[in-house]
Image (cartoon, rainbow, N blue to C red):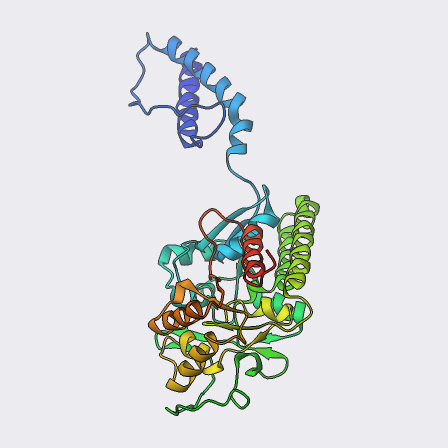
Length: 379
């Protein structure tokens, strides 16, 4: 009889430890306060045995509820909260998503991952990131890992648009885009002969790595996420695919609204950095920004005197419908361009690299289109 009682006590101690590990948010299980465990005296054995039985019953009664406190399914790590939000929409309640960069003020170009960040990436079931050197820290972490499923936004962009994204290096030496611009310090400007961002790439390729602003590309990426999750967790395959299809339908509707906002005419616009260019390409808008200006800003250097002068002149002209600025990469040069646009009454719209606090991808993209629509006089 004594042996049976001692076995029950050991079971009770194990149950107490498990109860302490349960999430504090579990519906019916209160956290247990840790107490010192002492060898029981013969008098205390019956009481402890009764407590053990009650505790075991309580543990059995709440174990299924406790499982709801943490989402089950594949572990997904995204480079930024943009891709994290996309993954969350598709994974829903059947996957856990964590974003390495979720600070709205962070610049992914210059982000350096900590050992803890690298560990998250290497322990994931699926990693979703931009690619083409934009979030290079992911590629560096994956060098020490194997058998991890990965998806890149640039691959989805190429599949959706047929355009390749040129790989960049965002090392300590700045952003290397492989473009050289010889403008000198001349004061005169010939808009007809000057290269603009719209025409700087070879046919079938682009140097603009900000592919999440292409709505068709993100619809394609959502479908790819669903298929990877279906492979990792076949039991919920239909669930993932339905979520991806719902997102694609929402983005298609948003794309149609954007086309209506831009209308049939080719809208001329400027941007201090080619962050939203893919969205405007989808709407057949024309980027009038001098290519040397955006490349310099991307590389973290000052634009040439010629590019800066032309950019400032354009910002204050009636030829430009709006100016797009990235508040996460502001410089004195971009600030002066914004001042010139504001003085001329040119609408200014902010596009960011990452999601604002508390906003998901769909809401964010809708707000971007709303801002453009308002700037163009449609709202």
